[in-house]
Image 1 (cartoon, chains in turn blue, yellow):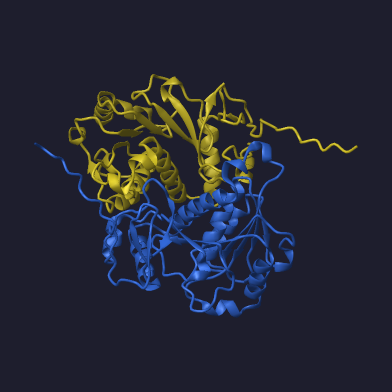
Image 2 (tube, rainbow over the protein chains, first blue to last red):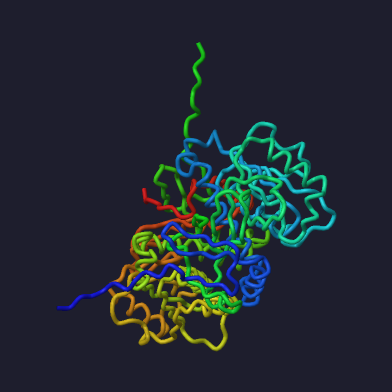
Amino acid sequence: ENILEAKPVVYRQITVPQNGTKEYSTDSGLVVPSISFELHKRLLAAAESHGLSLERRLEMTGVCASQMALTLLGGPNRLTPKNVHQRPTVALLCGPHVQGAQGISCGRHLANHEVEVILFLPNFVKMLEAITSELALFGKTGGKLVSNVKDLPETPVDLVINCLDSHENGFLRDQPWYKAAADWANQNRAPVLSIDPPVSGQAHAVEAKWSLSLGLPLPLSEGAGRVYLCDIGIPRQVFQEVGIKYHSPFGCKFVIPLHSE
Amino acid sequence: ENILEAKPVVYRQITVPQNGTKEYSTDSGLVVPSISFELHKRLLAAAESHGLSLERRLEMTGVCASQMALTLLGGPNRLTPKNVHQRPTVALLCGPHVQGAQGISCGRHLANHEVEVILFLPNFVKMLEAITSELALFGKTGGKLVSNVKDLPETPVDLVINCLDSHENGFLRDQPWYKAAADWANQNRAPVLSIDPPVSGQAHAVEAKWSLSLGLPLPLSEGAGRVYLCDIGIPRQVFQEVGIKYHSPFGCKFVIPLHSE
């Protein structure tokens, strides 16, 4: 008698050099370990060295983050041709760094999908090239750009997207524009989606309902809300180069929810 | 007595300079006119002049086309951790042009999602830069690259993705590698998805079950199968610059089916 046995399902398909403080799991039970910011930085650098440029990453992050935001806004029920006179409003808060550029890319794709986008970005004399190029494209959407928190809506918006923080410049939090934007977000009653939030020693300046991590999650604290993971197109062998054994946890999706153990 | 009247829904939200021979409509009845290849080319050139580089477009097209392909392969039912030993197989046929590069980008994202990808690309001494950079990234996925049709599978694959044609070099069809690849596709019993197919005067060398057009559709013939439209991130004012009045027909989606009138 022949019995074909199904091979057992392996739930630990991603292993990292140092086991972090925190592990997550997907809906189907796959284990997704967190990695340190340092290792995450090395992963992105390795990807860039093979041609997965910042520009490509900005585009893909913008597409996938906007897909998540469109779902949070109500998806097909909210965005139909019949609802064209009740377009959802998103306030997008960006700092002057790569995280801000990721936000602006997301904002362009949302505005392209007929979402009313108001982008807050503080005025600086010299801007990162990534910011400048994203702004040029965003400027073609008809979305609104403000550099003063006073010009943000006083009534609740449908969604706040928070890209105020970078991973390395904690001192930004002491700047007046940062404090003003964080205060505005906390006063507006809209739920907050944080894109690529840093690991925070202190309490979060803005409490998020959802956070979207890129590639692999950092060990985020409670203030990050529900954690989602975004595919950013890095091939398996690039993970390998920085010591990560990797199989995609995404299935057919590009953004998936993660659960804390 | 106050009666609030809903504004009527406008179904013709996109208008083009010359009305083409063919119009499509979305599921919700919005009219999507086709445009000529010349106008499509000017639209992409305008987008590039504002910083929506070929590199960005390759990345976004690859993501959205792979999302469509993953759905065609069975979506969440087919791609679960439990099915890891029965991964779907995709044969990707690419020519040495931008359309081929778009295909390779799609192939990388599919391979990243644990799809078994076999990429056919003919050997040329000198390759387009877009092809070279996509190949370098694809090479990191573990996907297979073949330059001879004899190395393509003899048994039916789950899906064939056809990127053999470019819009301008019709003469490619007379080359031995093209004919061999087209013959292989027609003999393999797998359904065919064509990405960015050209308007064809002659019969299609490979009959497609589905075709994915980028940005706005060309007036495709019957051999293109069911036509889908892919968002490629172009802002409204860029459409305007080439004389197209544009509102997004995508709703919350990035790939939508189109219907012929």
